[in-house]
Image (tube, rainbow, N blue to C red):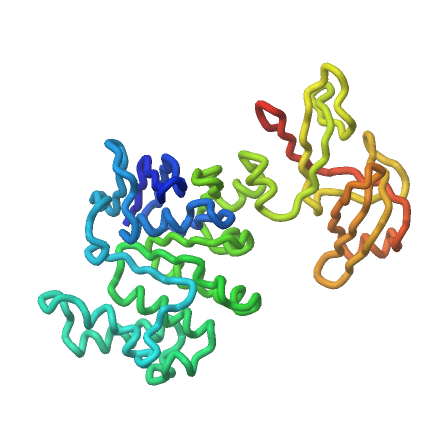
Amino acid sequence: MSIEVRNVSKTFGRYTALRNVNLRVDNGELVALLGPSGSGKTTLLRIVAGLEIPDPAVDSAVIVAGEEITVGNASNRRVGFVFQHYALFRHMTVFENVAFGLRVRPRAARPDEARIRNRVGELLQLIQLDGLAHRYPAQLSGGQRQRVALARALAIEPKVLLLDEPFGALDAKVRQELRRWLRRLHDEIHVTSVLVTHDQDEALEVADRIVVMNQARIEQTGTPEEVFHNPASEFVMEFLGQVNLFHGRMEAGKAVVEPQESGASAARIFVRPFDLEIYRDPTGTAPLRAKVTRVQSAGPSVKVELVGVDQQTILVEITHDRLRDLGLKKDDEVFVNPREAKVFLDDYSI
């Protein structure tokens, strides 16, 4: 079931939460809405769910599976919604929590008890909790509770599944496990899904496409590879992971990390830490001189902090083999050269 949002705006008093947003989610896609707090991603999700109504406009519409539902009743939308804080009924068992959406349907649409039991049993197997059907939420871990919340949302066989920062309240290790599990689950059931998150790693790992939002607008839409390697704006570049920013100028079509000269185009040069190389001796064109201030070797890569001649902090990631070759220690003088860079000028990027 596809989702289409056309020219949707939303204001709360004098605050603008969304400004002329357009978005399409294709059938079976998992799309992540990624952005900082206040960027409008949760408001957009709530409008699709029917929990908020967009500002009235002639050309504004929310369409699910070809049907306009802009002002329809939220209970009739067949939307599964998973919140950050589970929202499970504490006095109900796991089984009854999952069955809740089926039991409260109007009598004419309500399945019989045998079908409810079969449906709940299938879902508990799907979320790998079929042995815990008679436990209460307080007897479950945070990760297990979130899987129950997801099963409850799926029980009504929703047209679309909406997830509002579902793993935000969990610790880092459980979040990693659950997002891998969610991706496998989505590959199995193929329900059209929209995930709200401010966690870049989560969006890059789970989503088919990422919608980067900022200040009530969409900055960029694309695959994880597209938004990470080909950011459309400085905001997207800086928001998706660590990055070094150098100021310089354009010379013969190339960016040079130097103070801007008269008549030259100002350039803002962004380089990811893993796209910087460290050398003991100057090499390449206009290498940057720097001093080592910290070497952090715990983990799969080595993080090196440097300070440039202008006192700018420079972050570099290198391999453990490269660290052994260089023999770096604090206060060593080194030279840095970028392998790749993204350059933004006042009027375009290259």
